[in-house]
Image (cartoon, rainbow, N blue to C red; front, side, top):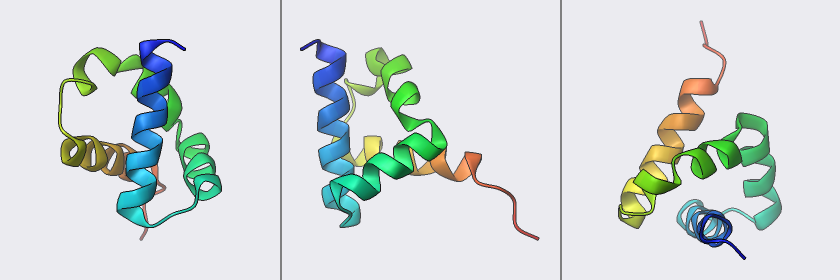
Length: 70
């Protein structure tokens, strides 16, 4: 597997553990908000950061793509 593929799995597992979600829940969330493509496209920058930063970055990415509430 590629380094990017390994990193996608790493991010998925870390996010799943941090948020107490199942693999299916993370997969659906990442698919809904395009997180897979985001992580892949930002691999060079993200893989040099720590786990807490990655989780927070994913949360911010998802939040920015959620519909605004009134």
